[in-house]
Length: 319
Image (cartoon, rainbow, N blue to C red; front, side):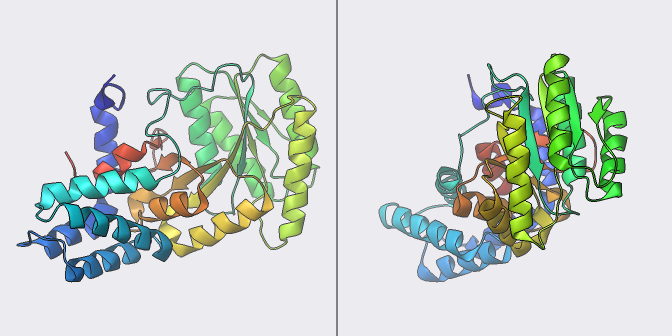
């Protein structure tokens, strides 16, 4: 099956549009500094390094990219812009954690044999965590799954209210309790309900505070432990939501949540409003955690399953 057989033209156009600001910051600068060149020399590599650093790719990942390009340039003495783009796409795609493409053909489908498929969502307040959960619920349901939400962020009344609003908008049921209730108890009740009602996908929200890392770790550990009493291998996915527009702050949040719990996947939000989309490359490379979803707009359908080949090719303007 060819790449564009499953990554539709419409989704590619949405991706291109959503990454427009980052593309202006990376691809247009790249074309400008490479104009008139036919060789990748030290001066160009210095300028390439600056482009990646200012796009929040991160210093460590930038050095890796420069080293890879330098090795390729030693073998391929003369290149044009298209060849340079091909080189960058290949090398950066190979660096990113995860598979070359999602295995579901762009559809929001749980892995076979995992029912209910349990997603525990973590992240600080303000990164788009609740919005991401709502969009996930809508998209999983749109692809034929029975979805249930669990409001286990019982620390903030607003979190419960916002998740309830998204449950209504996505037209999926929600399990919730009063403010201050035991978060693990909410998760337990959610999974009991999911099993009883033959639910396909369960999405559990959790508190987004980091001021007390030990308290966060203890709470997340407890939630995971009680869920496993209902579904032995739950959660199947621990999804960390990061705001792509925060640049280096997103790196720090990834570091702290990776220390607090076993994050399996990333969702990078708000990429449409920032020129810092390079953060996707840096975080995936440095933490070896695959990006699973990216948010490229405000609409309920503007959350995509991440495909690293499509992302990198869009970033560098490859047709």
